[in-house]
Image (cartoon, rainbow, N blue to C red; front, side):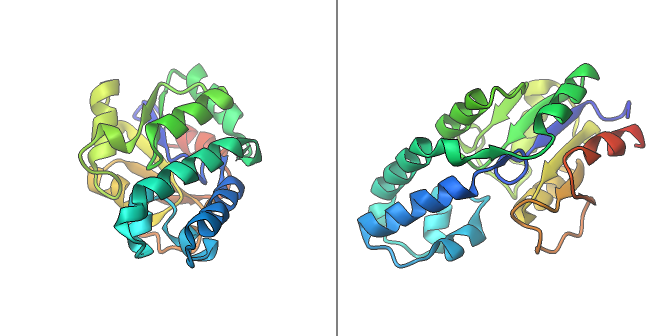
Amino acid sequence: MNNINSVSFDFDGVLIDSKPAMEVAWKSVQYEFNIKNSFTEYQKYIGLPFKNILMKLKINPELFTSISNHYFIKTSENKKLIKLNPYTYEILKWLNSRKILTSIVTSKDKIRTIELVEFFNLNINLVVTPELTQRGKPFADPILYTNRVLNTQTKNTLFIGDMRSDMLCAKNSKCKYLHYMNGYGSNELITYGGLIYSIYEIKEYLLNF
């Protein structure tokens, strides 16, 4: 365990279950903007920045700003639908007790991420959002940025994700990786790192590393 001094987490699907709030917000977008793409289609791209999702869904770019503003207002209004995943508080407390630095590496924008970190009172050393790096996941940039700010190295970093973009980000940065199988990307092909079914398994992994 002495070799790992930094643990990074994806946010949606790993530390929190925000899908109920996403679904309410997206259905509101469908109604307000006459969008035909269902939430089932939308959720295939969870993990990408919101505007990238709109691009994948082939929505008119002229609507991007209006849709984004509407969607984010609705997710904020419905944040009480968002739940912490089991053992989130426990594993963060344990990592802190071991003086292991923690960070959130997410494709969610800064305003919404900070709002939820404060809402759930999460004890995190650093929050990395798309505004801070030139390229987001699956590129290595977010992990490399985290290492620079926390003064750590990728070889001593463990990243916990639940989407293929998370796995590729870890692989491209050459950090350690665990894929959370109860997140949003359990059906995706994982060819790098290991698998966990509970956030608390991070403790066992680190103690046996």
